[in-house]
Image (cartoon, rainbow, N blue to C red; front, side, top):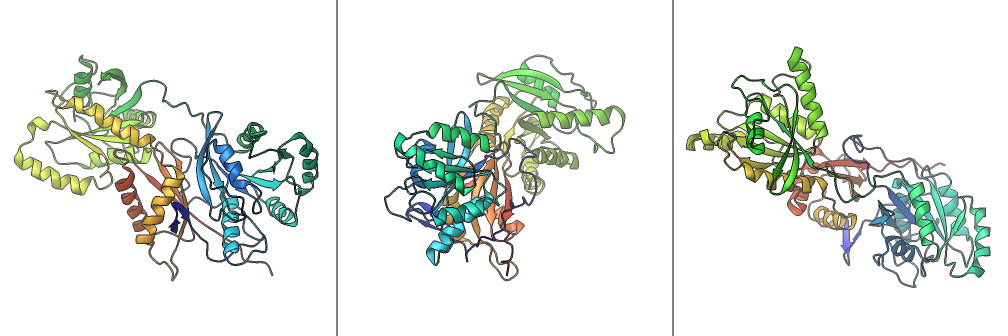
Length: 476
């Protein structure tokens, strides 16, 4: 991909015909909706050149983002914007003018539009109502009638009542009822937006908050000091503390005020064995602990800094990562750590915490209260990262520079290209890359590392999913 005037431009090799495979591209890891909120749905705005697509996109966004000029072909690439209507978020993809028999640059522009249609949750076909249905409009409608995504028809440039009658003829395109709008004056834009939300998959309301105290799971192997830490934070003997490992069986919820903010802490039973091999009380304690992690937003993983990092510690961390929760590492019993142990601990952390180098670390002592107040800032940082969303435009501009400097490695004699990227969800942040070929695991890790260097995400896992463009062979 290359960047032109701050707009990410990715041009496909070759063109797509009307026989393009319209089925949705399959998710490599199949986990888009398994963790956290569903992805932000995508609306592709398509149509022949100079029908007012970019003007309509600006009207949908409620701000001037797309470049508008009274000349056909100003928009060439797929450009994505984040939109909000009636409290619901969605992504709008503005495309270049689509023409079925285009050649050269216009063929690449058309291919971009077709790719947008293939990967969208809903498609908005824009037609100039003052001209009526042209041969190009009819060709586009023919293709869209085979699309699996719902199709909306916007009859644009209906600036006054006299042109309303002209929109009836657009029923002949066979893609549903034409919605008369004026992108220039905003006529019926609210009705169009309501229809768009009806066509897109349901997404949660953007409430701007989480509603109640943030949930924190206290987890770690037995006798690492979880209950002692909870008692220190609450200032009372809320949880039973004993030198015998495994004292806590049921999770104990406590409301704790740290830095003038209320948190809901859950003290969980220590994980000693794998759930499948545990028995009796310990088996049910493990199940409850797993449920507490799933119910929490962020986990404080307690490690005994005075002892070598054990397999149980790594297993607890794996549970947090697999659950997609934000994470803070609390190195407990720091008052027992001498200079030699500190040097040894640095080497252990480099080897053992290779899966969570992004986790926030705080050195504490639950017994003496050392640095326990530093947990609150670390929790806030981790949760902010967990909730963080990168705008589609900013993401693609950054990715364009990254891939230009370090392209994906060649695989099978061909070099895959990253066509487009979007953040599909938060909690944890998930990024979907639309590519022309498979990306090696090492290159995905490289992207994640650079993503963290640029945008942060301290304290939160980041997931990267790849969707490979598939295309059917042209029928003879």
